[in-house]
Length: 153
Image 1: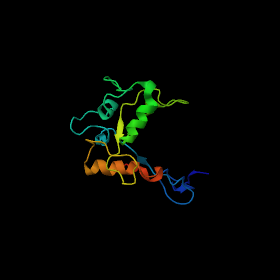
Image 2 (image 1 turned 180 degrees about the vertical axis):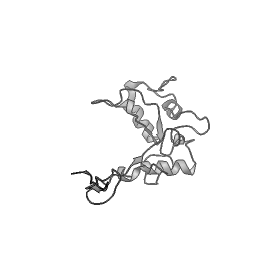
Image 3 (image 1 turned 90 degrees about the vertical axis):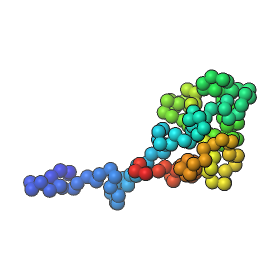
Image 4 (image 1 turned 45 degrees about the horizontal axis):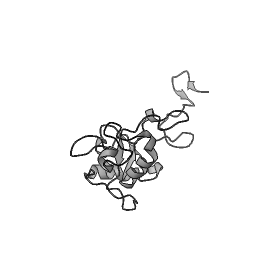
């Protein structure tokens, strides 16, 4: 039974969601990317524009000169070529439905230049080089349990 006794003292109080210890959920809250604060991960520092396949790969088959800068039919090849250059698609909620992924074109490509040397991808030319971008990009290569950062960073 939960509630209060006649004197107003809690009786068997329920633990709060963020409480730690036995009988609690031991929940910890994180945020992975913030579209404003982490902007340097998916924008060209020289122009301030989003990285795109046409800019990184050049005029190769499958790229176009209009957004989203690739032909959706060439998605597997474009994704593989971008990964070789150190860029990975940033999926947002609008890209995922109940049983489908990639229902909308990818708008943001995350640059993983500057991540740990264990990377197999070569760093792209003209990639962000600030130390803050490097530390955030390094976090993305960590296991999912360690990849997130605390909300109050």
